[in-house]
Length: 255
Image (cartoon, rainbow, N blue to C red; front, side, top):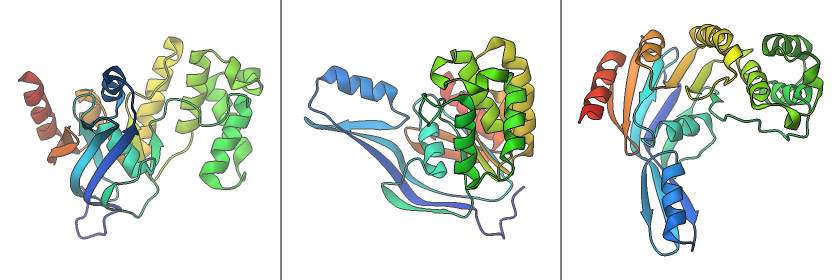
């Protein structure tokens, strides 16, 4: 359990996140915006649509906590993970972070597909570390786990979906992180790689410092989390022990 006498590593003070979508298009486009948004409510007029992804959230987190995020698709979980990871910035309120939050949310490479697998690994390593000290050892571990062999020297654009997923998963789970934000939807889709990836992910989660885990799996949440947040319409409606949070989420779904 977190020591409440210590300084929070993350503080959210009356945070709201609005995502504006400027459009003069038809209602069909605005409907598409609503269905593809990360969460929250859609407010619109003739020329503008604003997704209220998160609304008036005040909450603190402490080093070593394991937090499970629950809520139906579109409730605000992914927006919250992107916010604390620095991908999104708050529209209102104050966000204080005393730790770097590593996101495992984006399911594709942020580098050019023209790069080789090895070059993609190098870019990730440089972005994380600012230098290449220890890179060769890191690269060897990634190649070994991904089972790509000599294919790591070929452009990523030529990879199958399974090969690309294996490489990305291997890159992101080879290091340990002080604070991790994970969307369970992220993972390796290659069936032959699944069991190996599952064991790797469990070890990876158990070794992370502080964990934020968005998941629909009660088994996964109970195994790795102690604290639970239930999201609804961009708000946190319950902050409680994980078993209590799961009960609340199931109660909502049963109505």
